[in-house]
Image 1 (cartoon, rainbow over the protein chains, first blue to last red):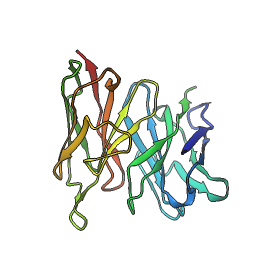
Image 2: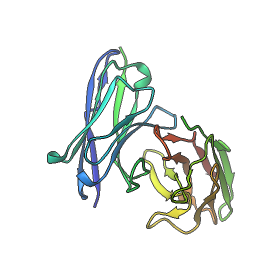
Image 3: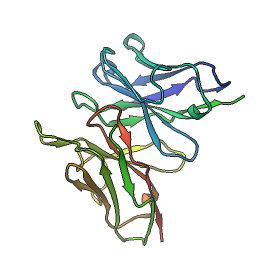
Image 4: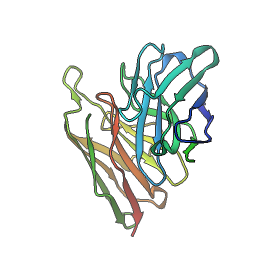
Length: 121
Length: 113
């Protein structure tokens, strides 16, 4: 059974930093790309970032490029999202998701329960 | 960036009725080299993460009831829910994975009339 467990969400001041983690189990972690998707309160879904199975390829939404960094540790089966220069508009539930097998950008076929990030003074 | 536009924003359907949700992409999401449409549909119930229903525009995920079906061309797509059940009340999103950044539609809320 695929399980994705996010952690690290917190209340942080504008301009602050936070690192989210996602512990994965139930599949061969290094074989699949992974994504972060967020959802602001009462709003729709926004794809944030993706990383290839090897970690050699990453991509970002324009709204976070240069501020967020996605990474993965295959030895720990864990996905990360380092967030810096946080803004109020980054307030959202952040979901970790496992991608399907598409040979490139892909849909997400398993999702975690999400972790809440709140940016406020 | 590819813009995904869903319609309607919400709809109310009688139990047993049919719900039709539309999704239009600002660019073609059909790759001609493999003839695949890079379009997915998700269902999100209150307080839950999204759930993948359909990939490649029309391929249902394992375990998804066959009352859910997807169709469409390179830019215009439809999710149809036949024989609507109470448990289908949710927000439905389309997503293109043709090119980065991946983008979602704004969502369609389905309710019972």
